[in-house]
Length: 370
Image (tube, rainbow, N blue to C red):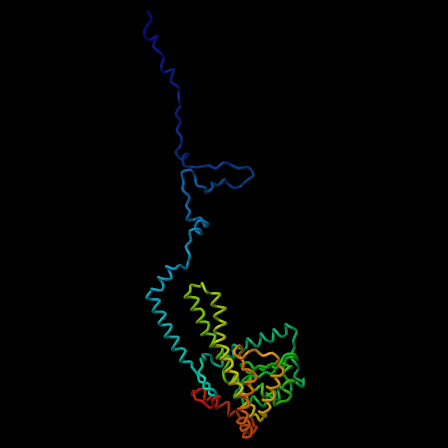
């Protein structure tokens, strides 16, 4: 009989033999990128979301742009409009603007017109310096030229200016006289600071020194009356009004307000003011040329020749200048007084009228009513 131990199944032989091997835990957390031949950089993992990951859209510019809210909304405008701090700012701004406006009100002595002018003569002169440089640069760029000092037309203009400068009350200015060689242009202007520009086409219309004194006296009168500073000051009020409307409408009426509003304000305020300035300059220039011993009756002939030379004339309400008919009519009314001033003048270049005008401007009193 066989022993029982010989028929026992060798269960230990049927069990697979496994050899346990200890793996360092650092291998589970450390990732060693495979080596790429011919490359000095390692493989980098992209930032694409996996199957169990959620993408962070806060860093996606396209998503943030699609979710952006408008800067100006009706709810925000209503909230700003109801803000007490805004009401306080508006009230203080209005009070400050009113105080600034009335502190710079002037009365023009020859017309009694009340105007707003917040710019001093020095500020206006500094602003005109850039304009003079730009004008000379544009003239030279376009191929134009100035007549030489020895040209008879330039000498004629300088003779007239030597008699008008002493009666202008602005002898301390740095006067410069330039004649532009342009026979097709009939124009002349005097910029603040004593910068005189005359187009050669004006001289045949003037004919003589008396006619030339009429137009140059008119241009000098604009500077004596401070009309340039007044126009600069007027632009401040117009810009404040226009931009206030644009702000209150949230910028929606920007283009319509800028173009249509500017045209309406120009038609209602700027052009009537320009016509009144021209009338004041006509009177002041007539008195100054008479004080310089030029015949003021020659001014009447000059403006009549200008009327004939100007074949097409716009309606007065569309222009910054009075019509030729109304201008000539007013000059005819002033001629007797101008002739009387010429007869009383000693022809020594006294600036009595200019000094009287400046003192009246400072005191806010009238010396004449046009």
